[in-house]
Length: 295
Image (cartoon, rainbow, N blue to C red; front, side):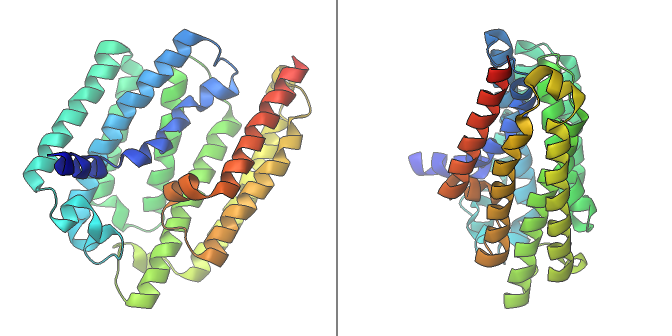
């Protein structure tokens, strides 16, 4: 039984819930994290959205299980390996979906956020069935999903969002998605196995160019954000100094992509790369200290 539960948790990709931390971005960047009621609302939103995200992962794995069998790592996924049956996966999917509805409609009682969550669900259904097979569209939908997370985080605490925050979120998610596509291209060139149906629309030259361009724009967008009037009025005019850590963090990720060639799982990179852990911590500390010093 315990082994079965382990496979269920693996199917839910609980470790990917870290992506849903984007829900907390409006709370963090608006400096309202000291408000316990808003923090609780974001925590509940995070939990509810994570249930839905896991349901979508199940749908995606079921749709991809034949292709996953050809992938050196994805072939170990519960459905592809046969550890979890389609019937068991469906039951788990329904339970997770209903739990999400309960959180947003019953606990948070926020219908605007629920509508956005359902929009995310429908978009990802279309993605799993068809849209992920279309180059550019596939990575764009992934990036839009992260933007939706940020909007949900803002809605549940009734906080307006900075345009720069939205742009940076979209670009960062696009960068991570392109990194994954690059990894798929490398696998295809080495083994001849197409781990994605959209892989014909990508090659190393394109992904390399896209990653380089997007990285540069992310840096520019972040600097523009720290120097925007709304941020200077609220957090002071020294936040641009935190760009140093953003530059180093982006360079580290580029090294992982181009030198180590290990961009297949951004989530695992975030969990395992101690260099990035230190840079992110230093960025957080410098951001908070500079903002609090101004106040």
